[in-house]
Length: 149
Image 1: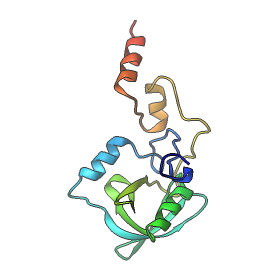
Image 2: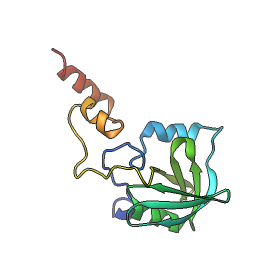
Image 3: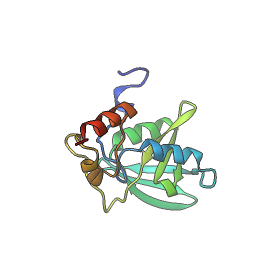
């Protein structure tokens, strides 16, 4: 157990910010601040072991993919299957403890599996393959200084 959450509720950090993988902090902020595209209430219908996610929103069944099917299913069970869908940001909101959890959504027919190890090294190299990166200000400064000729 890690803090107040069981281990299975902590996110799996694969290092990819591609559709269906980790929510980048900027994506999360934009989801929360987008007053024109609020999450549309819906119901989670199914999550398969392979990551296929089926939801019903406004009477329409939609399919997606997520790299954390077990964690998504656990949170959804705790929320009685209630979800919010914010399509412009590919985000699935699941209510939890007065707040919620965000899950990034990908195409069930076109997604990439998680790498065995999160990418590391020069951020510009993995950025091309991972869909983005994030690092602290001090780490970025050290990286920039070490790259100077």
